[in-house]
Image (cartoon, rainbow, N blue to C red; front, side, top):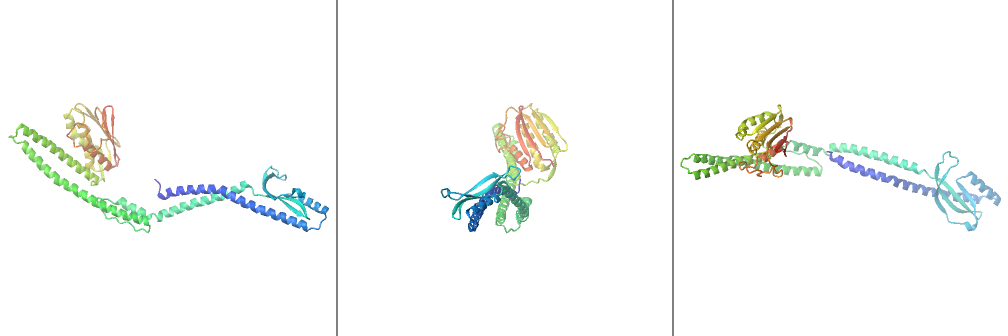
Length: 431
């Protein structure tokens, strides 16, 4: 990622470069036009002054012709030619290119030319004058060099200003970011933003104040709800379950009454499990768990495998283990244990009797696979209360809890179906 000033500076520099590149031919055209106009005025003055000086000389016709011939020899860029009255025409201005015989290389030079009819001793003469124009490539080169120089000055100036502005103008914004990084809803420390004389930053701070206050209020409400629900719901559920257990032990129950009570007990057990899982999800969403522990993932996995080994043996499931040692992660041990148990229980529950389960833990991957016949729907896999099998004993929240625990730890969980095996993989972030 790039700073905001850098993102705005780059388009500006590109725009300036394009404008300056376009300005080079424009500058050249303007300078060349001005130069030609100056040369036309210069040529006009030369013609008029020369004609006036010759008119003031009291020469005979023969002396005048000799003087004009001498003038044409000693002034190679001018020519005075006698014409007849019928050849009199309007002034002509044009640009001409020609080779200079006294230059060794055959280099062409540009000349600005004026052909004007003048009268000397009341006789018409065609006066032609040519003045050298500055070379076009030299003009363009000079303009380009000046343009590049100013572009470099603009770039250096912007880089310097960006660095200075980034330190001074954006200082309140960075202080606000630092305050937000350290803010924690669990601690609920009062946040104080530095005052700023920039309108946008001050508006941002005020909006953040209101947003944080609302979040704290909602967080407190949700936390109170989860705490109340944990106590108020679990207590009556526990009482009902105890009463049902006593009822099931009554010898006077008929078989029909016993079946009804047993169905109520199963539904109550599932309701209690759903309640606990929903409360767990709410606590995870509200960030009510500490994530600063260093967890020995391999030890937790081995403990869970030992505890749940009996469940696999009851279904005659073959369990294969490949667990590396010394796998430590940062997070919450309780949530990590729940994640491991849910994945193992989910694999045991959905593996047919006589099937197989493989558990693998490497440097950064925890993988568990179980035999199956059909791929699960990935769109419904981690949705709450989605039913992916005919088993009604589960709460429908196991995989959702796994996904939320992974999000809490910044891990990623993935599912795929290969070679008639369901494979769940958790990519860990090692400590």
